Image (cartoon, rainbow, N blue to C red; front, side, top):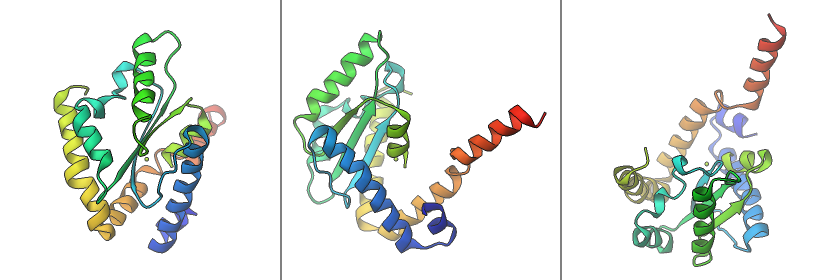
Length: 186
């Protein structure tokens, strides 16, 4: 349905489907955390297996700035972290525990535990130094958030452009076709 809306340039249908997908994700957030996320709010998702090199805590580099970002009411932002640390990676385990503790302090910040295929699909239906952190925070605060709230038509155009470029590459149909060709069309 999402692809059809994109292919047919049907903005209303695309927005409707994205809202449905958000509602499904937010139901999982509510089930796991008790938090009720708003589907109208800009939502950022970081979802992958937890490891130090994957920068899960990059947005927390300046905790004050992060808290200011998620506490604003005129252009709110919700953030979801999801992942599972490797069993013997103490740093990753400590990182996810820190995120969980911090999430208790805000209704717009959730951590989903585990990272199974179902959760990965649901969440994706969304260098590691100070310079990177500043770069990403500036993009979120000064480009992404204003675009989402003040120029929604342009935001929608970017969503559709991104989907058009990325869906063919990360699609399960493409993966199955490629697997079939590799295994049986020799």
